Image (tube, rainbow, N blue to C red; front, side):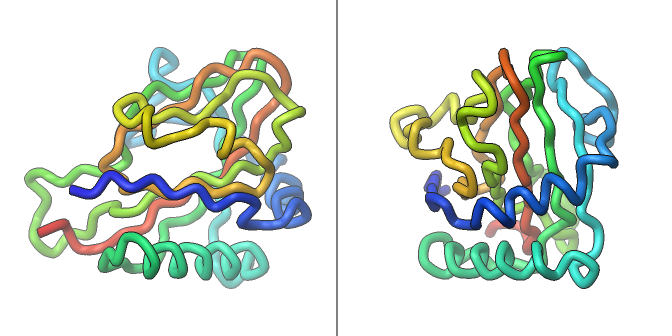
Length: 187
């Protein structure tokens, strides 16, 4: 299976990043893992959701266009629409982090059930607003240059079967937009 990591620097504007944070910052809740179970040994962060592609068209449309462009140029996955966008807040108060994990499950999936195929993380915060909190691919360190991913508006694309995580934030607050795009299971 392909293990391509694509970094699209400043893929969305700083204004759009700030709009996303403002629109969601009143609705953050403690993040869970899997089926929503709180697991502080695995993840410490808060999340908010952008529900409704029509209601949030100004956010969804440029991101969906970006997903289609990168998928057509690099992955050529058979994709459906993305799941609702998750906005994640990692802060120094709880040393926010997310241990390495995969976004998708592919074994023993019923034939007609879609799976997560493409994952996307967009950096919403300028790098000078926090310390730590670096995105990581523990099994693909040679393919990922952390410094290339830190600018506000930069998008990181990767197949959902790749292990990835976020190191603890030691100072300030880091926000990101996370998106998963579904499709039929891999053949």
